[in-house]
Each structure stands twice: as structure tokens, then as C-alpha cells.
Image (tube, rainbow, N blue to C red; front, side, top):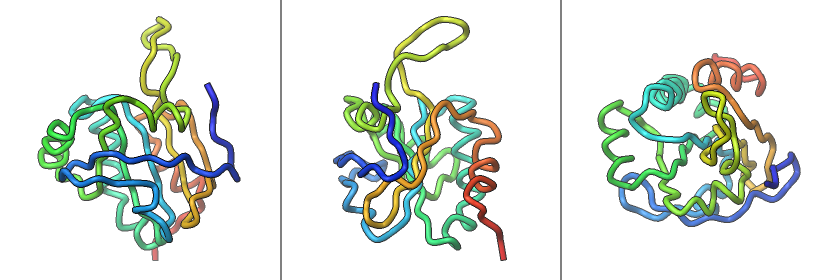
Length: 157
């Protein structure tokens, strides 16, 4: 499995968004974008992480950043997740895991002491020109957003 490194071009993608529209990497051109990959909508850990991004969204926006979540869930499940938890950023469906694989966020991982294949919880910061600025793999659902804010040196005010 290939992992992205800072300076790499971000792999192209075309995915269905929670509102039924199609989004590509070019949809976010000109904006710094945080793309985070998570295993499954409507689960406790993924809900915690999504709500943390929602609650910090103003800070990211103040720093010119857009937040996007990606999972292998269906568009309908993502819409339910968005509505249930009042998520105010886009969720994208990578049902066939093409984008997740290209970003190194799909593969072998440890889950409850067993080796499984699945989504590797990851976060990518992509520049407005489509270059990877940061790639964080095997992040934790709880506390990740606060750590990301610290790692990126973002401050409010």
C-alpha cells in the first residue's frame, strides 16, 4: 500500500456527495482542503470525529480551509448521518474504495487484535493547487481534530 507524502500530487477522484451531487478533486481547487477518511457513518467513533470537525469548522474556515469526510458508505447513509448529527460539511461516498485506496486509506489494519482489511482512519491536507501538504495515517477518532489544529498551528481570533 502506497502512502501519500507531503509534496505528492493528490490523486484525482470523482465521488458522490451526501446531497447527490458529484465532487472531484477539482471541485476544491483554489482552497486548502482537509479530507478525512473514516470507516463508517453512524458509528460511535466516526460520529465523535465528525462532530469534532463540525464543532471546529469555523476555525478551519477562518484559516481558509474546507473540510470533507470520505467513507465507503452509500450516499443515502451519508445524508442520514449529516442530518442526524447536523454536519455542516460535505460527506463523500467512495463505495468502491478507489479514492481511499489511491490515498493509502484502504488496506490491512489491526482491529481488536485481528488483522483485517478496511478504512485506515486518515486525514489529508491538500493545497489549493492539489498538492499534499500533510498526510496523517492511523489517527484516533477521539482527540484527532484537536491534535490536527495543534499540528497545523491554527489559532482562533
